[in-house]
Length: 198
Image (cartoon, rainbow, N blue to C red; front, top):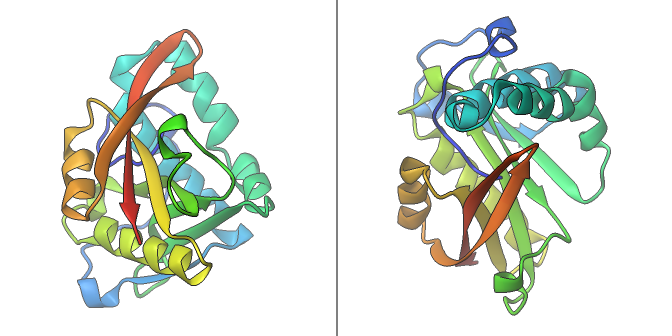
């Protein structure tokens, strides 16, 4: 399940110690993530995923997914994957406010005919940093990086009930081309597949 922006905090999310404060857009920078960012990325991932999807699945399925995907160790390990490119948005004090991840080699039937595709797998923004345009900045950065690497198409999957994110992607030029199922434990949800030519 991909790109998100809303939520409902669980126990793991409450452990976040990320210092957040109101920022000016001009103070936001985007850079490649390092292992030192793993804890912050994991905390934001837990928070965003919990708020966006927590109400739609059992607590057991949610906690299992968070433990498998959004711990400092799991994020650090994923950073070692040469097929994944993680970038973070930071404020002037270098605190992580959000992140975006590109993934090479992934596909869906509805994007197989697209020219040189790469997946925008995740794009998360801390809830206290909404309204600063960070999501749009992360999308633009992902597009620039993908294009510089020779990719011609950016694709993503977004939960069918995440209407806010869908509107953001539509405004950024993405179009709906299909759907796929996303399974977490016993929960099966539908993602809308969207693509954009670079």
